[in-house]
Length: 223
Image 1 (cartoon, rainbow, N blue to C red):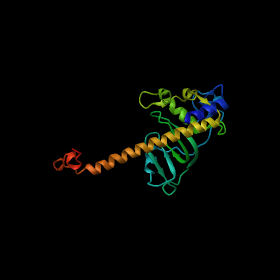
Image 2: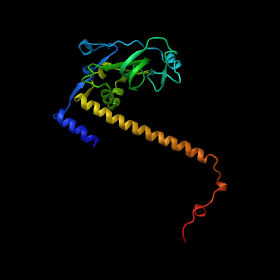
Image 3: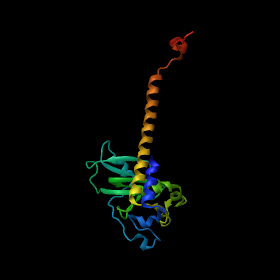
């Protein structure tokens, strides 16, 4: 059922297949990259934040609505009371400026630390979360463009040349809807598994095999 809907949309809206486009044609970035033709970066979008990783982590609060966008696995939020500096508020894909290809997507208020940021060049044609999923699919390719002897840095000149399929936006949104649904189901399964492990541990934490009885003594069967 899921795939049939996408197939129906493809047959209706792009029966000859989707055009593949380079990332530089569909994304704009928050900085210009060395060695890149200016024609491939006609527009740069301005962001306000880029603080140190140490400061970013120190801002974390138990409750907050401002995402702390790190380059690593740190995941936290802060609030206006804990931080009175500049705050960005937009929809972005992040690529770490150093380390590994730990790609992220976020929409809303955030403070950035060490990430290169991208957003859609035209939201009516290119759905940013769809582009993010396409980039995740090519994460190994992107990782191969991280280079350096100690701390590796992304070769953005090469990364922005990566091509992804760009079907009509209705198809892009349907793809994202399906992937998000699968993600929610996966998260629920993981939560249920963790819950099972927790409660089974509670049940058996005082387990004493000296007091065990054979199952047949508890629930004897018919002779």
